[in-house]
Image 1 (cartoon, rainbow, N blue to C red):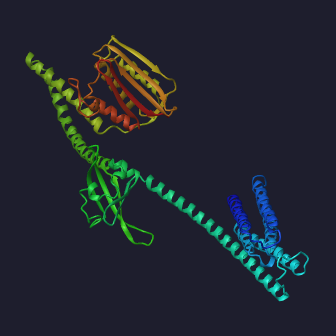
Image 2 (cartoon, rainbow, N blue to C red):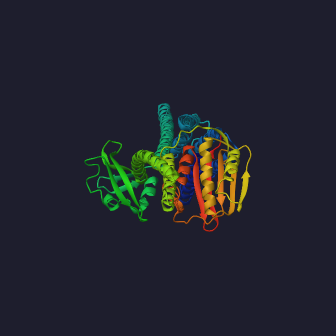
Length: 530
């Protein structure tokens, strides 16, 4: 409303200035329609100027703008009545100024304001005519007879026109305001809906692409841009076949609503894409194009391939485990027979050496089969709360008395107290034993073995770090250290770290390795804290 009142001030000034110029024009042309008219005419023009300026100042300082507007309407009715009086009274051609006051009041204050302005102007004009008729004030048209029937007819038509103007203008202003409010609400709802749809579309993790009936690309969401490695600005309104040559023109969604292709990204990467098609319709239900939803199937394909490999390896593992069991029985018989032969006196020196070789190799083969069976069919976990620090101390105590330990190995322990996890103590001890053996072997029996136990991640994780100062693992081999049967040690089975990895995983943990040439290797084991 404040904006409309400011516009009213501008329109009033423009209208009053036009009236002033009209009076000056009459004066210059020598047109006289009342004795001394311009003195009074200019007085009422000045009065309108003054009230307008007062009204403009009031808008800045008075909060009750409605009351101020009503006062302005009344003052306008009085001022225009003065102009009508000095320019001919009942014969004045300035009567339409009343209508302008009613119209502006209807526009600003709606129906109530329009009717109030019509009442003010009607009363003012009626009083003027009646006072002229009864010669209460001198008439400017003394030669025009005011017959009573004419006076009543003139008043009736004037008041009727004013009230009709006030009512219709107020009614139209109310309708405009109401429709404007509804339109504003509709726009807000539309904006919210548009923002919601845009947010939903842009938040979809799958790619979403739309094409028109000519199969030209019209839209691509953010996820689609990231999957394809392109920008929609570069492909909008281009044929779909320019982006996906494998999809022939006219074959979108035919005969199957789903399809898969291989896509070459601009950066040179190759990904698998899965497509689904559906019709795109407008608000009238008419089909205007197609919606294409696609996903990057690369990781899915890798997972499927990994599952196939796992299933194949599981089958091979079961078969190998069975074969290992079958080999182990005759191997035990052979070993036992050789030992019996060694006890006989007839064996010569060369025969005895051969039998020792057979025994050593039989024992090595037996250890390999034992490790393989442990890897293929690990024993069932018997979990309980384990103090990691105590487990490390116990394992190191036993390991320090083993043949692998030498006096040239220095030991460093940094163990936080009260660090516990849930696990199988015997299997966790197997993990530590294998890692200690690898560390000592990597240092060739001399160097620094460092063991650290600490909590991380806000106390939610337990970290066990085993470091050696050995020769390190070559970069090209570090990603293979957990592979079954991969070994760089002479006579090694290649299953030690594979068993470690499997045991750690069975405890819902994680193991990683870092190594630098001639600076040593660090194995980091992470377990959930209990």
